[in-house]
Length: 266
Image 1 (cartoon, rainbow, N blue to C red):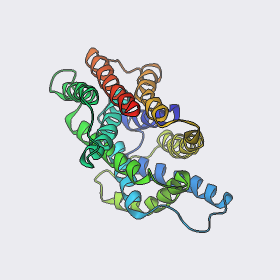
Image 2: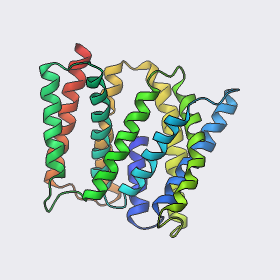
Image 3: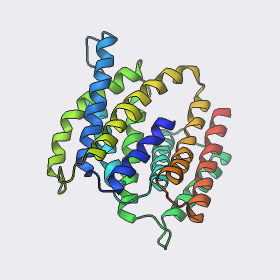
Image 4: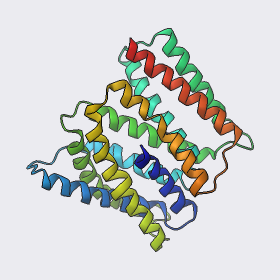
């Protein structure tokens, strides 16, 4: 979870300081991650490339939306919006498939939704609207990616294959207005750390731990990602946590936790 939170910190540190443009950060992150995960496939002697192009496209949309959003959002705010959007898309899909929630689940989801709306309402402490929209899109794309990979026999191999398939899509980034206009050594270093360590190695560790966790444990432990990102933003990026963010974030995480725990009990 610390590795996943580090993605937000590295992206904001590089993009917020204009050390690199969003297109270059995304391309370096995806391609470096694909290289390391591809090496893992070679070591594991996989003869066929796992994954699929639909999941790779979802991964690409997540990655570019994530980078563009962090041009405008703080690390803590961005991580919270991303997490809430991922959970909302996955829970919403379950409801559409007629997995009807109980009253307690609905109450938890209602608290989380109201707090999320309150976080985004206009005001002095409100996050940037465009940045928030971009991060919501990134979260929905990651939710789609997660749902598509839920039934994979070897999710780490599938992730490796999807990273490899997503790498060529980075050619589309040349059409962004600021593509490759600002690339510095600190920005490249941050993107490489995001791709190699926070993404590739982070996923490798996560998928090693996942079989040893019950579903409710796996879902609940992910609640720590926005918290770790918030602490890291204060310590390393000197970001200030507003009362609005703390209260809304607590209600969002609490509401989702209630829904997860109730669903597992059911």
